[in-house]
Amino acid sequence: MSDGSRGDGGTGDGGTGEDGTGDGEAELESSLRKELRHRLRPLTGIVPRGQERAVTPLELLYDLTYVIAFAAAAEELTAAVAEGHAASGVGAYLFAIFAVGWAWLNFTWYTSAYGNDDALFRVATIVQMVGVVVLIFGLPQSFHDAAEGLSPNNLLVVVGYVVMRVPLMLLWLRAARHDEEHRKSAIAYAITIAIAQTGWLLIAIVPMPALVAVLALIALVLAEMAARVVIENGLGWTPWNASHIAERFGLLTLICLGEVVAATVRAVAVLTEEQGWSVAAVMIAASGLVLAAGLWWAYYLVPSGVILRRWPERVFAWRYTHLPLFAAIPAVGAGLRLAAEALEGGELSLLQIAVALVVPVASVIVLVFVLWSVLVRSWDLTHLPLLVVTLVPLAAAVVVAAIASEGSPFDPEHLGDLGALVVVIGLVALSVVVEVVGHELVGYPHTVRALERQARGSLPQFMRE
Image 1 (cartoon, rainbow, N blue to C red):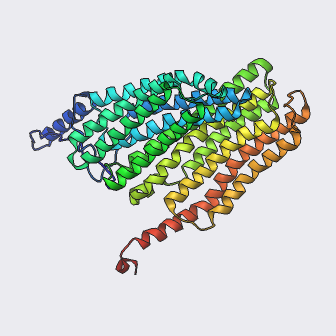
Image 2: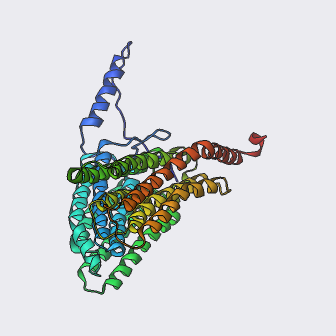
Image 3: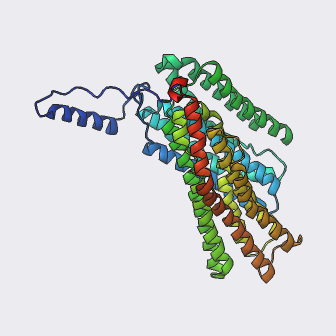
């Protein structure tokens, strides 16, 4: 397995004068040709061995489009929970997040090796972005069907998903043609995508009971994920660059956190426009910012890039842990929006509102702990007490909500309900503060010690003495 793909081609030799002017002109011409001329380029040699692979503007635009899909799914989740369809809404939400997140993950893996930024690659990337937009248009029907007891896999969602994935299948075939060393793996990836997409399409167009359709989708998901394991272990890993992968996953996480801020601002803006500012509105606005900032801080306390460069074999569990993380973060924004909508009245109890906020925040915190664990591979109990202490305010928020709600709908006119909501939101925000402060005081030195032990253990005996 390589942790970097190979270079982007030659730079050309200019005539060399005594003052080096020729070399400078040749280097300038080569740089301009690479930046401005996007004709077809070979896929091999994109990153010279030992060098870093930077994220491109096209990749950032691609990521923004996908996060819009996450945000749209979170909006539908908010509406479903508010209307009393929590179970079906969560199911449709996880279905949508997996479809978008899985397509993003696979394409990101491809681009780390073969993202040469030529015209063909750019067009294929833009086509996938069109597919994301089509899928977004199918989400309202998907959530509605789920609420009616039907499969969330409607035809419009599937068409968008197919448009997202077929370009990647063609790009893998292109990689197989250009990279003889990894040809078998590239062809296997293309075949896997073709089979999976055929299955998704058949499930959407062939009449079948909803339970059968959902089980078939789960089987397809598990089969495709297992296929990657078989391909990588049996045929070999395609090239990838550790710094590039760590940065791409980190940036998508960052943009998702930005959506938490955006969801908070939208919800509070609507609330204050109708009712004016209140203590609860201020608390929701402040907590949204604290949650986004705290979860960002916590995520980047995991030294992903450093560890993946040193131990690239740890990327497998690390990258798959991000799939539920991409689901949990936008759901935090959905929980904050539900809290804001509760101030306008509704049928939800304070306990339901608290659970809608506590569950995604707790999920993000636990998943960050899992990311740290699969990378650092230190299984002692040093971090476990910190995790437990971080979750204590979240448990307290649920207890407060349970005592205050007594099973009745939340009443924004009742001072007791209003005060309890403020306390619940404050406790949820406190949890991320505890996580960050605790890690800075306890977690950081433990991480350093654990990695130093592993680094020494990987050295030959004579170098450890």
